Image (spheres, rainbow, N blue to C red):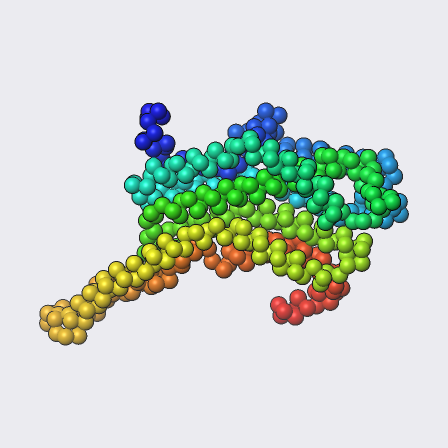
Length: 401
């Protein structure tokens, strides 16, 4: 293929598409032997992240005498939010890369092999893919993320919205100012920026994914109303969206840790966070599934067209069946029992049912519930701050039996 000809498609075959195999951080993983070309060596990356983000905080807290209970109001040992953030949520953000990569790798082939992209739109589709890959590989984007992490994430959001205003292992309020400890300096200089960068990098990728879907939805797609997935052949998009579950779980851990610190160290009650919990669920589920709604107009139009066309076909077949078997059209020696016309009529009815049940969005309520439960899982243990374990188990047993 002559790449100098701008009128030729950029790909002859459906391209492999990945939101994660690119960008400066991916290249850094490879050059430091923390990842292979397809994000192998996951355990090595997780161990390196823990050594860099969490272990120095542990060591410095021990050296400064801020690790054990009784040393101050919030020792490192009791900081649920920070330990959840760095020991569980951070590795999840790293592990999510491999999961999303594996789910998304065959995505482009699904679009093409299922016939959703007509030949006339193939060149435009390839251009959309290349645009997404350029954004994924952008050096400028990741530099801006780093700048926003240090300029906004650490200095403003964490200090004013997350950090507790009490004597802690990372700092002490003195005369209206916050005096950082050695561990605190490592926290705001390395650990927090690393976590926030990886989290914001995921939201940047989700924006690329949403933009890609929107641009694809602008093409004239060929949805099949009779497809047995009841979604015109587009149900695979929901499966890809579920691959982002580790990112949602990490975000849920972040919320649970923040609430736990305030419950155990500031006297807050779980019920006071009901709006935050509900808002987080609605926002995150919409971020994951909302972009799929861009296909609603074309899917709805395909369903209307399918109901019209298959309705006419079904009417013709039913009318012929009626004329033959109820109006005397069948020959005298033709038996009704065992006749293939009966099975054909049933098959026609099943086909029309598939078209009639076609969804206008490529996900189901079950998908919404699964994502919501993923976000809520880290919050569930905090119920024990409101209901004793024995009473909670008793209520669960009553619900089951």
